[in-house]
Image 1 (tube, one colour):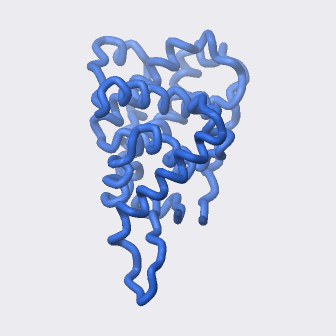
Image 2 (image 1 turned 180 degrees about the vertical axis):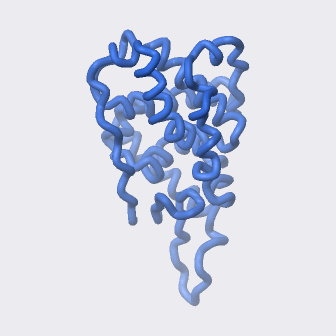
Amino acid sequence: MRRASAPQAPPAVSHPQVLDTPEGWEQIVTEHSARVYRLAYRLAGNQHDAEDLTQETFIRVFRSLSSYTPGTFEGWLHRITTNLFLDQARRRRRIRMDPLGDDADAVPGVNGPGAPERGFEHANLDHDVQRALDALSPEYRAAVVLCDIEGLSYEEIAVTLGIKLGTVRSRIHRARAQLRTSLAHRAPRTSVDVEAPATLAPRGGEVGVEV
């Protein structure tokens, strides 16, 4: 398996008090909204649900600043985004976020000039790959997206999802097997049987992995 290196993470946020100022919050939204949206799109599989999931993530962050423990802020965003997606998927099987009402307007910067849809063209995967991901169970999809697209280690995924390391390995293995089957039509035709590669990469080849 060839695995792409993860994008360089922003520095950890060590003082949650910084986020309590309007300027600090605007900076957080500006720096992280596009990345949260990309993850949300890869999980949800469509623009509408990805936008709703991104807004809900920042609403949750905004409400939870007082409980934030100094550490890797991006890891915290991963956990919130992924767990919100899984919570919704478990309740409905098919992600369809509830209307956000007035809460979204109460969170500064979420719908402003740095709104995540500006990065939409960089978020969506090759259509075949996105359909293959959508066919996975939410639990398998979350694990393989975090590993093969976001570049998290198995240990980081275990922490993010709150599951055992062995469960992470099992979910990723099974997800990759299903992706190979779904994408078998894209495998090069040769005189011998070969494993079909599943390339999880945004169009343009920013991040990729063969499984």
